[in-house]
Image 1 (cartoon, rainbow over the protein chains, first blue to last red):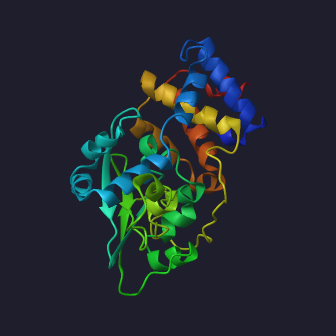
Image 2 (image 1 turned 30 degrees about the vertical axis):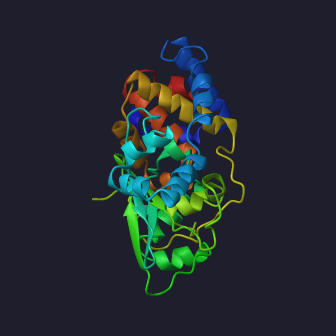
Image 3 (image 1 turned 135 degrees about the vertical axis):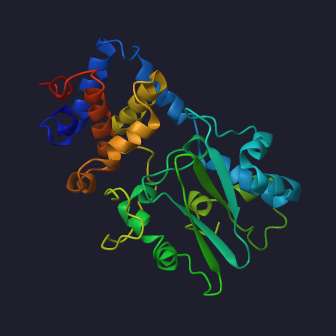
Length: 200
Length: 94
């Protein structure tokens, strides 16, 4: 039966099988010639953690933007020329802000939902069963493994992303950065900071 | 009943492994799988819910053994066969 055909256990290496399916679809008109290459170029030119870093830096220097970002991220990021509409359909972006006694961390327990249109592909560990299973059960221990030791008094909120709602963490501005401009501040922000497995 | 993809809170998985300087894709075929999927979604051959469902109904043993983009490719070929675009034999190059 076709539905249970076990394509992953076929003999040919997967790269050859992917090429074969692509060629077959082109031959039958389901793909235009060069369409896949164009999509690959578009992917490479799409989202990047740098977009998230720019959003965070703006929120650190502009309290008005920060308020708009937390209220309606999809609209607010337009102020930076950014958008969640890079994919097939615009997904909702929800930005959650860390505070002195509160830390946020994002996961997709069911698969790998992530604001790809904005931030690019997620890291491998984000998609792993290990992260997805454990961070909801023992977030503090998982964050410790990432080198992020939070005080026992810090409340940790784990956000489970879905196909429709994607999350990004707004880290706290590090102390001693009062003299840095927006560009220098953005350079401090990491992809892990945007997911919540790092402080910044 | 939940499927194998619903791992939230499940115990028994190993430590989380971080790869330093991880590239977006580890091989060209992975980028091709993502692009192929985007093209087929755009063309309406199947929708995103069908794609996720096709991943989520991979039998547990194979789901856990497959890499991330191997699961994607398997879901794509499953849907292409189910939609009558090509037979499993044609998709496998047989």
